[in-house]
Length: 170
Image (tube, rainbow, N blue to C red):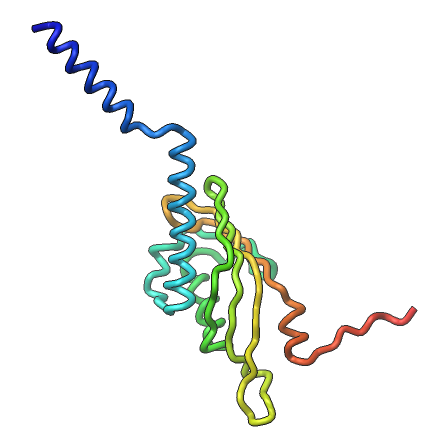
């Protein structure tokens, strides 16, 4: 009887060992989950305009470290305010994710966005398309963004609107 129980315990121990993930596998699973959450955030919030879903993707203690963001502006309300301002300026803005890269709790989203530019009209009075490019770096915790750093190409939209780069005179 004791031998029978010992065999069962060994078998259960072996099976439970198979179910345990190695640290590398855990990290890979976390990175895959974080990439998927960043992809869903982009799709649902910015392309589908589901702003009521912001609390599902943005932590209460969220901080945006992007250039120009006030240091006291934090939380999901900030993300909603930023998104609404973007949609007001570019009502048909759509984002395409070009690359998603994860490293532990960090995810980089390399994106391009296309929308009609109401500040740049063609000869018929219709808004011309405006192409934006950038990267968003997110630090994730429990499937939510807790910190963000956004960097976008600020020169290209000006050039698309007809501004010229004039070098200084020597």
